[in-house]
Length: 149
Image 1 (cartoon, helix red, strand yellow):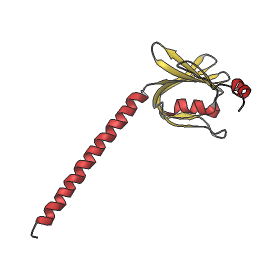
Image 2 (tube, rainbow, N blue to C red; image 1 turned 135 degrees about the vertical axis):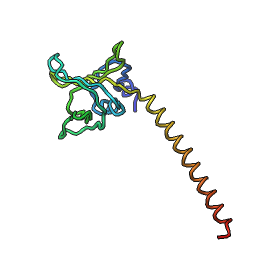
Image 3 (cartoon, rainbow, N blue to C red; image 1 turned 120 degrees about the vertical axis):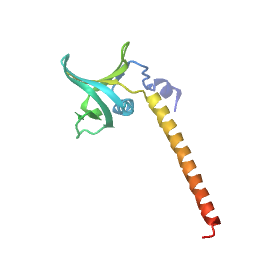
Image 4 (cartoon, rainbow, N blue to C red; image 1 turned 90 degrees about the horizontal axis):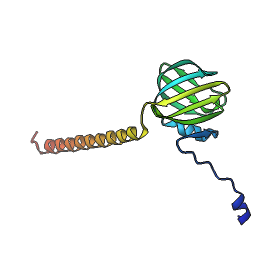
């Protein structure tokens, strides 16, 4: 690559805490680990519905719908033109998915850092229990081998 090509190369955006995301893959990555959320469906500035749910799936398919029902959110990034990443003093980070005059606001109720820590802690606890069971089971087999029966 020549020096001219390197100098004219477009730099990928760097968005920290606030900004607009238009790339569908980036939107998908932001929404993927949301977990529990509070959501608001806003049309032309008026709240039409709101509730709490869990993000069960985030996908990119122009032939499928975004669905929210029974506290479950299935989010299709193709249902929206872009995502606005915002901050509020009360709620912290939140995400506005925008499509024409419609907006789906997602306010995270779970923290990915805490959830990852809990997952790692649960995995470590499970490993310890399995180790104890296996070693206890092994000891049981040894005891059975020593019996005269």
